[in-house]
Each structure stands twice: as structure tokens, then as C-alpha cells.
Amino acid sequence: MRVAVKPGRPVTLLRVSEDLKKALLLKGVTAEAERVETCSTQIAVELAKGSGYDVVKAGLGNHLAYVLDNVYEEAKLYLEHLGASVIP
Picture 1 (cartoon, helix red, strand yellow):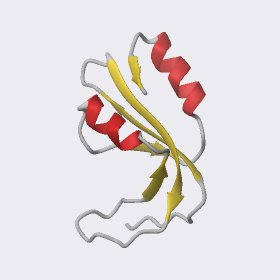
Picture 2 (picture 1 turned 60 degrees about the horizontal axis):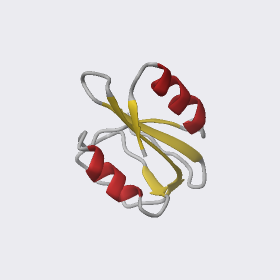
Picture 3 (picture 1 turned 90 degrees about the horizontal axis):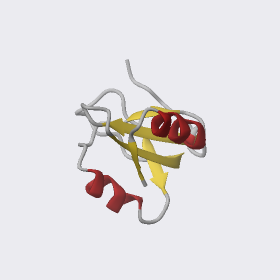
């Protein structure tokens, strides 16, 4: 099944380490992009300036979970409650 998401929607991205001690949490907006035929579930996201560095700094890989809404603050509070170090 292919997923199509309209541009301009708020999105929150998350990647958590295996031990649940570190989490990459980003917010952005969906964008239009050329489709890559290697994966059926993909979206394009415009992130805040400097967020690319946060992805590299986190070192958690490139597969991210996403929610089509801005739930950044709620997710950050929950992850911190669990004891995770949240990047950024």
C-alpha cells in the first residue's frame, strides 16, 4: 500500500534507542518530494534549520516513526518522564 500525504501538515518524528535511554524527537511540516521506489511508506518532511545535525548527532539510524500532528511537547515530556535523554 502506498501512502500519500498532502504538503503543509504538521508532523512529529521519533526514533528511540534500543535501551530507551536516548530519543531523537523532531518536528516539521510535510512537503512534496519525488517518490523513491525502494520503500512503499515514505513522506517528505521539512525540518527546522539545523535538525539534520541532530539526526547525525543522535546516531540512532534513519528509520523514524511519525505522527501527522505536532505532538512534540507531549512526546518530550513523556520521554523525559521515562528517563530518556531527548535530542534536541
